[in-house]
Image 1 (cartoon, rainbow, N blue to C red):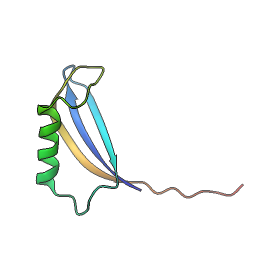
Image 2: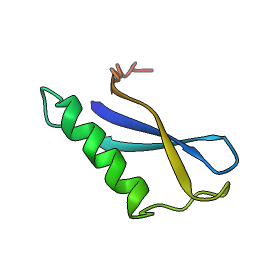
Image 3: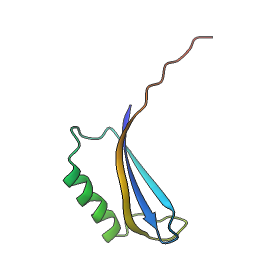
Length: 70
């Protein structure tokens, strides 16, 4: 399963990660940047360390899980 992780900085300087499943691929960096700007401008999410004040990074993460029969 793939997710996109958007990493923000809050007022306390801590990292806040928002993960979304099944990102549209290929990922458009311009669209991701604009979406992160909108999240900050609209104060769309609350963190325990205060408002989101800056962008840190974004990445696509792929996780593979293989069940083991026991």
